[in-house]
Image (cartoon, rainbow, N blue to C red; front, side):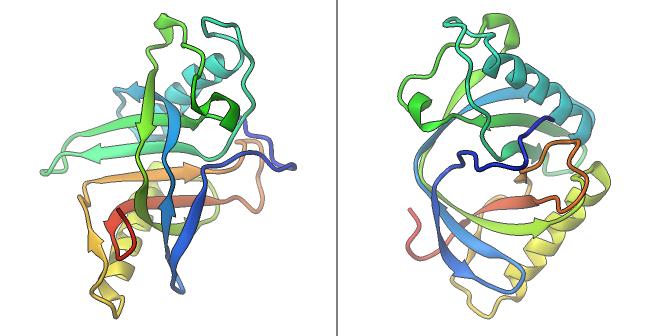
Length: 191
């Protein structure tokens, strides 16, 4: 993945509804993303393949030949079957504000889809290093454990078999990396 690392770039807007020691709950506003569904065998391979298609889109592989500024994070959603034997992936790019209302149409061969995200509430756990197949499940399990151990019973976990990994840094950025695991939750003040 190639993400700029030393200057501010656009990200989806949110407010923090709860800040705990090892997680936070955020309320995100409605937002528009471009998404690349991937039939992959691993998180890393699927993220690479999906991001490659999105990268082409933001560098002019769209019907307007528009260049689109990079945003963060790059999000990989992971849906696992209830038996845990199958995973599907979808890699998503947050569209900058100027394209939120009317984004350019991607070239058809990219197999991208417009994804209108309604306002949502997510529990977030931050972690450093690289997001890899061997650590994302552990980070998700740690987030679920933190939610289970939180003294308030006001947090309702939605489907634990579906979560997302947010990556904020370019692949060549080796130090002070920021990643997050996201789980949709119910919480007072969330719709």
